[in-house]
Image 1 (tube, rainbow, N blue to C red):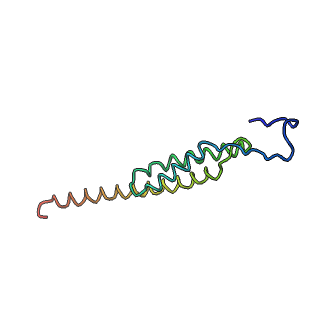
Image 2 (image 1 turned 90 degrees about the vertical axis):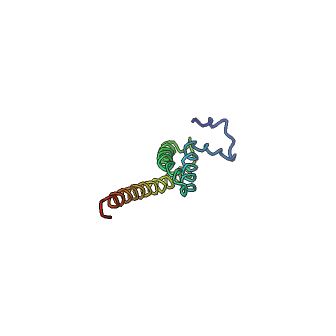
Image 3 (image 1 turned 60 degrees about the vertical axis):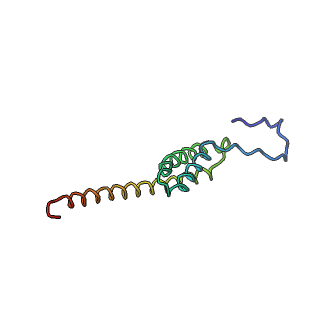
Length: 114
């Protein structure tokens, strides 16, 4: 993004902030939706996407701060994505443990004499 030549700018006029990076708001809303719907378990799969888009948006904003804004939204998406992903991993381990318990107790109960 190029700025206007000095002869076209008005001294003392407020500068226009750069537009928000589109992936910054996407990352934030993916993280919010993932964490907000975490009691349903399915929205937690949004966490890794929020983490990915948040990190990507932060890198692109840091590389071109005059071109993009939205670092706070990107950071929020990144953090919420990490939290969602950790909860997803914990949930998957809990599910795997439950399935193993059911299988073990099912095998024990199917043994003769029990």
